[in-house]
Each structure stands twice: as structure tokens, then as C-alpha cells.
Length: 410
Image (cartoon, rainbow, N blue to C red; front, side):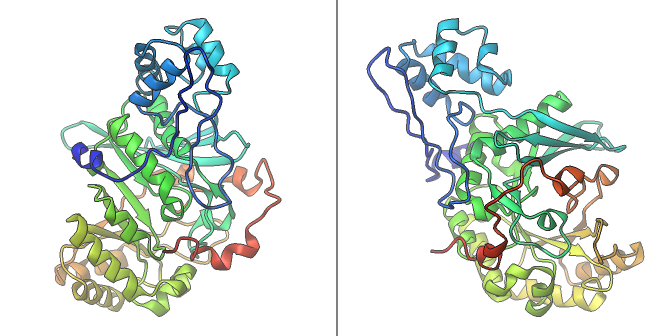
């Protein structure tokens, strides 16, 4: 599965300028999105491949093996600061810093531990904005622990799904690729174990920052060595982007946040659905499966009295059968958030929904609620720090939100 990525057409989007020996490298480009809302790129080591780091070392007049040392320190030892690269000559460390280089790791601003072992971290980015990432440990029947990292792709989210806490907190900017990768390293540090699974289901809409998400995906696979099949990219649906993702032929799961079996109901839950009709979304999902041979998973948040009836389940089953077979539905009972009018369905209603889908031969699972007491469960990625952010974004996107779902076209 790792070989698949090597044939993908994902650009590194990093240009390492190679001057003559002893000439200091002063610039590197990390293009993560064409969106003007992405902050200026940082000159960071995290995200560079071993080959890139070897070239960088040579550009500084060092031998190539110094790049291998940098690679080991960044990805294996998870060292956060260049001056902590004690195996590297002090002069080389100083030259890197003088040229504006840094590792690209953010400090942990806050940590909340739930009784079930789930840990939510707040990372403080260079521009003082906060992002959340969640580590979810799950022990199987044999006693081995699988550690899943739920990572954010944006600071906030512009799509404002009606039941989602993140959307209520507004949107600041896209994350750069290294800011996505570092979330996984932070989880590994806190748990003192390797992350086995990564889900792009944290703050933000991954498809509105697809370039950075793909770069992060490549780094997680090739440099941190997490299998492609162990990663899931989630989307509520952004026009044209599922086809773009399919063209890379990744072996990762696509999870589509559906939340309703028809267009009218979906528009009340997911406002951006108005620009992406359900039939067009389903057609793209069908073509994604045909292009990648990877099953599409549909996320469905169950909202009491809104979309959780047996009739809704029957309509959903009919919709899925209309567009193919082999689909999987992951039901997510609503996690209560402050200020929301929605309610979590009773267990009996949830089971009735499951039974209705399974009787129609739809593979169904119910997501286990994790980290509820730490506000870390899915749909709860907001806390008191986000309600009162450290930095107020003077260039608010409030006026641009109605058009945000059309940000990726062509």
C-alpha cells in the first residue's frame, strides 16, 4: 500500500534552492493552498523528506549524512528545537537558525484527559491561534491497543453544519501541511506510543485545504510510516474535490458526512449542501469507488426527531442502493453541545435505525462515543479557549461564508 503513494502525482510543493557550498539557504516554499486565507508559509523542517533534508545539509556545506541525522531527529526522536539536535555540529545548528529555519513544532497549550483515556490537546500555533487534536486509544479483544489520532485541517470551519460545535466558533485560516503532521507527533508524545490510525475528522473541512491535506498524508505515510489504509479523509462534500482526490488513487478511506437521506433535509442540517446537490454528491462517490476500488463510508449524525426515524433509514438505504453497492454507514449519535437545540436519540431509536438499514443489506456500525467528559467526542471540538480566542481575526470571513462552499472549483 505504501508503493501506491510513490506513484501518486502529489507534488512535494517544496523547492530547496541549492546554492554553492557554504552558501546559506534563505528561502523555501511551502505552498499549501491557493486560498488567500492561508497564512504565510513558514520555513520549517517538518514535512521535508529524507532526500530533501540531505540536499538541505549539502546546501549548507555539510555532508549528506547530516540530512539523515536531521530526518531521524525530526521523525523518530521527535525533537522540537534545532538546538536540541545534539548529534549535529553546533555551527550547523546555528547556521540553520540564522537562516530562519525551525523544526515546525507547536507547544501544547492545554491538555484534557477523559475517563476513558481519550486525550484532547490544544496546540498553540505560531500566530497564536489554537487547534485541537484528539488521541483515542482502543483496546481490542486480544489486549493490544490501537491509537487513533483525529487531526484538524483548518483553524475553525467555514461550513457551519448546524449540529457541529467547530462551525459555531467561526473560521480563521487553513492549516499548513506541517501543522497537520505535527498533531500526530504530539499525540505520539503524550501517549508514548505510535499512532496506528489517522482520521482527518477534526476542526475544518479537509477538502477546502486539499493540497495541504495530501502533502500531510504523504508525510504521514512515507516519513512517519502510517499505512495508507490506516488513514481516513472525511468531507461534508465540496464540489469537484472528490474527483480530484480520486485521481491520486490513495488507498485511504473516504468518509462522506451525509446526515440526511434527501436533499431538502440535508440542506437544513448542512447549509453548504445547497451548492452540491445530493445526486451529484452520490454520483461522485460512485465514481470514486470505481476509480480507486476503495469503499466509501457514509457518516450519519443521528439527531432525535430530525433524521432518526425508520422511514429516514429506509430512504437512506434506497439512496445507497441506487448508486451502487458495498457502501458502509457509520451512525454517530449526536453528542450534546452547549447552545444546541438538537438532542441525542434514545438507544431504542438508534437500534431501530440500525435494524432498518441492515434489513436492507446496508453494512452499518454505530460509533462509540469517546471523550465525552473531555469535550473531545466528534462534534465537540470547541471549548472555553475557542469561545474566547487568544487572537481576534480582524479579517473575519463572516461576509465570505455564503460562498465558502464554492471555494474549490474546476
